Length: 107
Image 1 (spheres, rainbow, N blue to C red):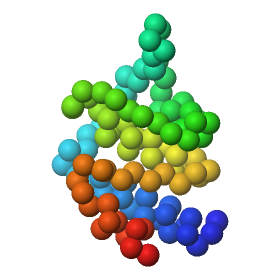
Image 2: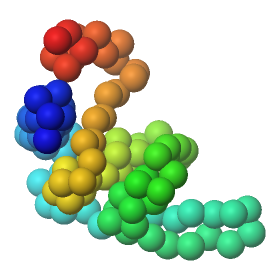
Image 3: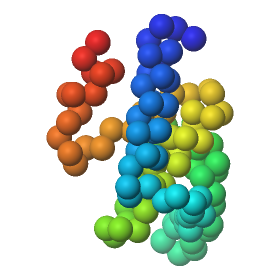
Image 4: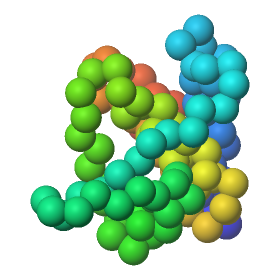
């Protein structure tokens, strides 16, 4: 891996651990009820399938009502991608306005 990739992986792992230590992170694993719909049929899938889809499509849009697990889904996706070791997972919460304060953006 390159020096830049190593830096991103290290930062991603540290950020993920920080999120997991937060008060809102569930203390026990939560099995998410993920579904994809083509408008007619909804199919169930798990977080590993979502990681594989990300490798194929390179973009994922998660749309759901507040409090339904979007952040948890994306963090579980980041954890799965990091564990696979074939991509760098970066999760930047856009709603908090702190993107420029992330260490990877400042180096």
